[in-house]
Length: 329
Length: 300
Image (tube, rainbow over all chains, first blue to last red; front, side, top):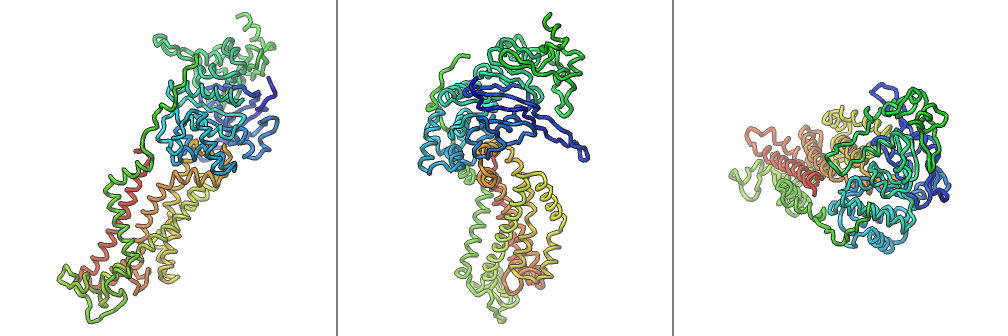
């Protein structure tokens, strides 16, 4: 891996949630001790259930939320110390819902040129030129310039959102489920566009998704998130070939097969997603884990290095008694 | 997953009318809005051109021609709507009275609009302590009866156009604050606000160029409602003798001056009453219509 362009060191975000009128605020660890490294040109796929902290992590990276602990480094500089504008030049978002991410009262040219105007780049003429070039880049004709988002399809809108993210030529793009609101036929177009743009501009993506097929198609590395923690991280081939964490296995099993007669796959997860305000003791995953034992309830697993990443599970901890049982299975 | 050929986006149709076209079409199909807008515009023109349109000086007394009946009750074209108890031409007073009503309605709505919008948007956008303070102020304001407070202030300060405008302007901001706060809370959740913040846009910029354009339609509706409210309150205050002072022509004052003769010459009260009713109805219809045509639900 080349020098990391984006690095997260033990990042945590704790919200204080007030329950009831006189209730004491309780801590909610939305993101808990997350460390990640992204090299230039890499695509890190971040997967996990709803509510596991994916979007909070994205907000921290965009500078919209300050982490309560830890550091985010871009090219080795902590982003807490940088001012907003400098950060915005390097990291840009593409949001999930192109129906909500474009201001309905603005024309496409207003929307795409906003970053240039905020950063005071060029004059009106050079900005107009940059907007046209960027729209061409994402496959939109110049005649959309004076139209409004309501006149466009979802795929076209998402292209506009991509153009807005790329016009400042950022190094890192945070894609928060950029295709989940789109039709399947349009999804592949947008994914291919993102892939092409990465090649052309050497972009680094943090790609948040719950669609594993999308991750497999696009990502080079995958991080699996559960209740605010990264429970497994590995190169994409390795993760899909040999998933180690029971949660990763369940996620991979949950992918629907094209054959409807097989029905909805059984993930064996049983219990519902736990309440993040009072997470389970020990390993947060133990109430749903088919392999859980007494040790999982008592002790939180530590990160165990693997061939290309790490996993947090007692089954893979050589010091745990469960490790030997795992080997014999 | 195999790479699929990207469909040439040039072939994808950019279809549908622009928001402006949709708006124009909707306005044309909305009878209430057209009627309200028409009446309000007509009255604004009448108020502006009062010196040209009024057949007589509204202050000129002619004690020899007191309470001449209007044309539809057997009067003459010399005084189409008759004269009042001091022999002043009723039509001229009505025309000049439109100035007072529209001025008070407009300026009071403007003042309270600025106060209420600033408070509401700040509360909705910043939340937390700011929101708590604004919500408290709104509750305090809602607990005060407008007419009573206005009466007390006018009684202390003395009635005049400026005092009435000032009092109403400082009292009628509650609905602005409530509605703007709710709309801002709603719009603030949209991802384009996050996108603008991620781009590095400053807070004033986010509020003015991302949030305001999306809540301004609600604002227009409240402006019209509060205008009608202020006009009615002015009429009420003037009727009670604590608003605009004689001899300034005001519709509320005209009703008040006519009430002594109401049993014998009911038109003295009816004419300004009907005009007041029509103006308030027109403004309300206009507000309702504006809400209908700008509502995002039926967009697309």
